[in-house]
Structure formats: C-alpha cells, structure tokens
Length: 228
Image (cartoon, rainbow, N blue to C red; front, top):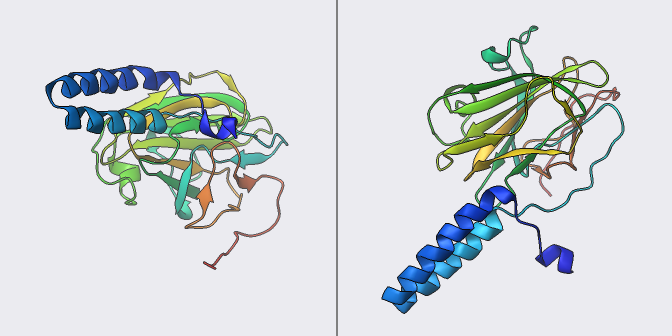
C-alpha cells in the first residue's frame, strides 16, 4: 500500500515542485485562498513527475512500451527521415500521454543506440497524426540484441514544451530502463522492426516498461480488438 501511495519523484521534477511550492507560499501570504489553490497545483506537479518502479519482461525479442498512455494509432508509416532508416514504411505504434499519465519514458528493447536526432517543430495537438511529422521531436534509432532495427520518437504536444532524452549514440541500453521524459502531455511513436506485427490495438492502455507492443519471435498477425 505504501509503495502505491509513496511513489518516487523523478529528479527532473524537483525544481518545478520547489517553484510551485514557493509561489504557493507567496500567494498564501497575500491571500490565503490563493495559497490553498497553489498547494493543490504543487501536489499536482509532484503527481505529474511521479516515477514508479516497473517490472519489465526480459526475454529476447520483446518490444515493450516506452510510455504510459492510450494507443492512439497502429499502422504503417515512414520513420523520421533524420534517422536514415532504409526500407520505407514500418508498423508504427503511437502512444498518447495526457497530463495525468506517468511521463517518464523507458527504452523499448535491449540493444545499442545508433542514432539520436533532435528536430525543432510546432506544438500542435499530439493526438493528431500530423504531429509525428510537424511537431518538435527527439528521434532515436537502435539495433536490438537480436540484430533488428528499431526506432522510437518523443513528440512534444500542445502543452509540452520540453523534451528530455538522456541517450547517446553508441550507448548500450536495457529494455525498460528510464531514458527521459516530456513535459507536459505528449506522445511517443515506436517504429517496429521490419516484418514484425504489433500485439496491441488502438484504444488499449499501455504501461511503460511492462506492456509488450510486439514480439520479434511471434508468427501471429496483427491483433484485433473490441470495446467490452
């Protein structure tokens, strides 16, 4: 129970929490109701930057979700040109994070980072498909331990104004490891290796570091689902 309530805070959030707390204190000295309102916003800020532990499946070949949120779309798309990936379209899984989701992002597979590319852009609603092309983004390509190419992209949204990515080219990474976050409300796209079908469906909720998006060893076609 305590593990559920006393969730760790990501270190990137402490400066914001301190700023909100200071503003709340000053507002409270001027007018008490404003102070209480500021306290609520401070608690929300702490909630936004929560960083719970996750249990990541570690079998080779699995691709896990890099973000908490709703699977916005599943379908073929061309990876960002700045990554220089050959082969044209790949299956893309887009995950939308609202302001109430955990925003700490996690590596989708174990392997080595081959390319990191930041692109300036707009800040339109991240739930729109055109956000993948026009919004500010941080794109990462990697080679998995079983030799496949995988890409994932952090995309800023309507409210988001800051993408944080701690990965570097040549870095060895583990599936489920934390690698960054986006403030506040955003989207992460995952471009699966060629020929791999996704195991999630549009509308499904995913959990970063835990939900399996795809299995490089699976032979089944893309799954279908319905609301029940």
